[in-house]
Image 1 (tube, helix red, strand yellow):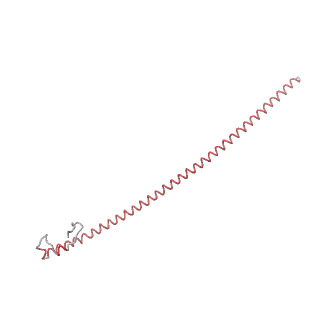
Image 2: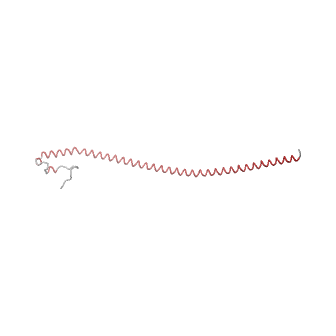
Length: 152
């Protein structure tokens, strides 16, 4: 081979080597830029996630506060309902007691009225006077809640 061919081959190899070196440098530069871009994106995602975490914690706190308020309102309603049941039971007990007392009064009242009626039957002062008579025996009769008010 002649010298000129060898020179051209060496030049071609050197040019090829330069092209490969330039391609490697450009590729490494692009790769470095890509890695830097990925790092920036990752950092942005971390910052966004931190902001979202703070917002989620705020919402959780709001939800917990609302839940606590609801529980307190329910407890208050339950207490009021229990108080109302207690008052209703007391009212029922008092009503029952009042009815029992009224029933216990009926028999003595009937006995008393029977005694008054019997006294009027056997009293010689009221026996002949009839139903319109007035006197000590009729004045002794006790008034009942169903009686009309007395005129003086």
